[in-house]
Length: 155
Image 1: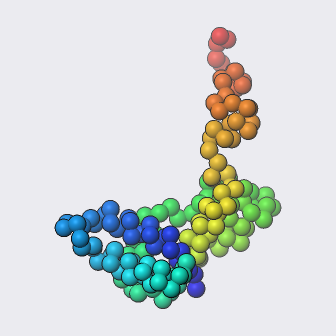
Image 2: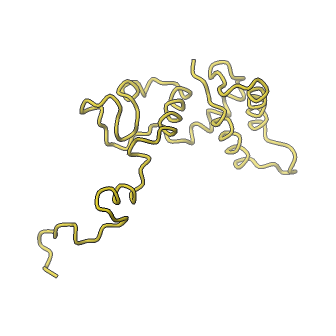
């Protein structure tokens, strides 16, 4: 039983609002209304998560349509769990999460995405300039740090 965080409900509502905008400026599409009902109950009861399995079918279908538009896995093809790290330096998932990713539910996957995004420690969250600055002290290293390519004429 995975929980869908209220932030994901908000993202899905906004995705549907952009996808099916109101023609009269007042009414919302059926998907937004279904998700808004879940959202309102979460706010009223001060809950951060909605149960993935007990969501009303229309709201779940609308959320799953939004979910299908998001990237599935956070993998950046630099997996350090294969080298024995308990948490992947590339994506931030644990070895168990990496191994069981194909069988996790959409709600479970989004919970992992939320955790690694909030932690923001994995390499997938670093910017090129930040990595370059750490390695060379400059945002954009000059070409002089790269060895000449064999076959290139000397300058």
